Image (cartoon, rainbow, N blue to C red; front, top):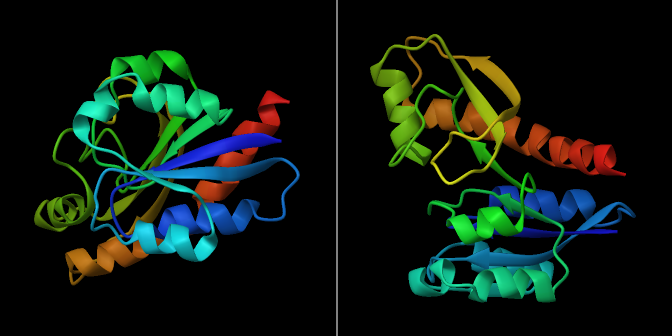
Amino acid sequence: MKNLAVFASGSGSNAERLVEYFKDSDLAQVKLILCNNPSAGVIQRAERLNIPLVLFNRSEFKSDKIVDLLKENEIDWVVLAGFLWLIPSNLVAAFPNKIINIHPALLPKFGGKGMYGHFVHEAVVENKETESGITIHYVNEHYDEGAIIFQASYPVTSIDTPEDVAKKGQVLEHKHFPEVVEKLLKEEI
């Protein structure tokens, strides 16, 4: 059984989807949810789902405290699900090729520092893109620059608002993210 730690900064819909997907699995389980935002919706989701939640601040994140916590809980994979901070090098080094992220655009377009959530969707609309999508990628020490694992796209019409783009992307996120995580875990066996 593989133990997953999910990091989230926002509402936590992808974190909840991962918990539900692996709830009855003999392959993996979400053992911890970690959050850097004390007002994030993921906190209530973790409580409702009965998954231990760890809140942390920036200094704790950059120290070895989080790495030690993950190792104490025998975490095998780290999954970023709407987590906004850059991952420090000590965490990347502790989990080489075992940290993955989901990004709400087709990288390398609309990636990098400050490109998350509504900022991405607004940029897609402002640039009159005809398609957007999601990217699941490995995490390194740079925003959105790790090797791409999976991408899926959807059409963007001339009348789509950033909210429309966000809704289309979230459908793909909820469908593909757990499946891609499962595939990576199976490849490791």
